[in-house]
Amino acid sequence: MGTSQKPPRITMTPAARRALEAAGRLFYERGIHAVGVDLIAAEAGVTKKTLYDRFGSKEQLVVEYLADRDERWRAFLAPYLDAAEGSPAAGILAVFDASRAWAAEHSAKGCSMVNAHAEISDPAHPAYAIIAAQKQWMLGLFTDLAGAAAPGRAGRLGRALMLLHEGALVAHGLGIFPDPVGEARGEAEALLAAAGAEV
Image (tube, rainbow, N blue to C red; front, side, top):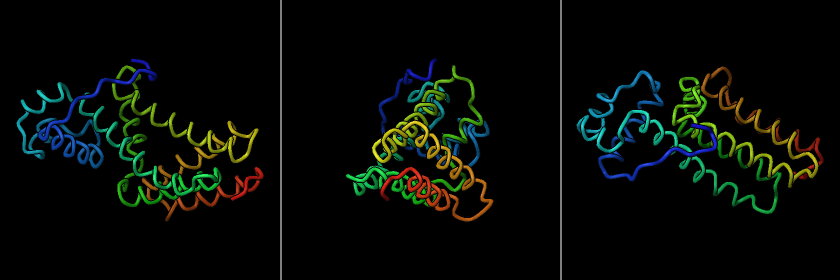
């Protein structure tokens, strides 16, 4: 399956939602390959048959887990961007502010997409498209905001901001030094100033 085609999603029943919540927690904490469907079913209080009836496969459960994380991140980010509306440079910094808050609340082990990609690097895996699309969306967001903040610099500045953002998320997950997302925000602000954007 190519990265441009989104895998199909399922309709969530209450049992499916419980299974997804359990799977999401376990996949994030222990790794996708390390968690089996028996454990997910037990943690969710559903039978293994129910889990397969709802999702069809562990692969589909991984798709739903990553898609759910992406949807929750975008909903979390939206009010930060709304508050910065009218100032693209402020919007860029708002992404870092949102990531800093999200990382503190939801991502002690770093970015779920980066972590998943460490285990799923085969483009034929249905979850690969979710991972790639999420990062393409982030690059598009940074590029659009960069183009509005510093016309003529969209591509290069957008990529630099993406590198700062993604590196900060990885550093956060590794816990090598405190507040890497805050550090990256400061570097982003310096980049914007150097590009002539009003911050």
